[in-house]
Length: 212
Image (cartoon, rainbow, N blue to C red; front, side, top):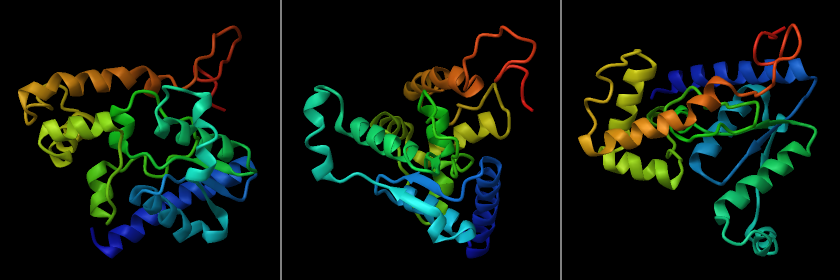
């Protein structure tokens, strides 16, 4: 992806972030940073517009993790790290942000609770084109490998989502992996469709018919 394209993406991401800060009366973003190239890309795109002082990279060190792991035996270390970063971001006077890509959001089940997803409309292959290695769960990486690579998986997802080809979108995937992909997409459908679950009791309800 050309430098011109990178700057254009940064300008769009940054403009949305700047408006999100203004809407909430905040001046800083707390980006969950797991040390990946994808998280670094998200930080650099944001910094390009809002400035370095406005982006806090929320990290967790190994030394900080060790005393916490015995409290949750059997819980994967990565999940505990993610949740600790999440708590830290929420406790700051800043707008929490998560660097998940569109591929992760489509295939990862529950959506991240952070309100700002700076890479949320970039597929994993877009992340690669912007010069960073893509990130994803072990399950997503397994599906991508079985599909023949992230390029093949993203191509199918693009046909389904961007081109709205609901019939033959997965024709390019190996038959053995098609059901895994379909199950992963269905598993997160309710989270993407209804990010808020609020019983409707009044005339206007958040997430149903109250959108300001």
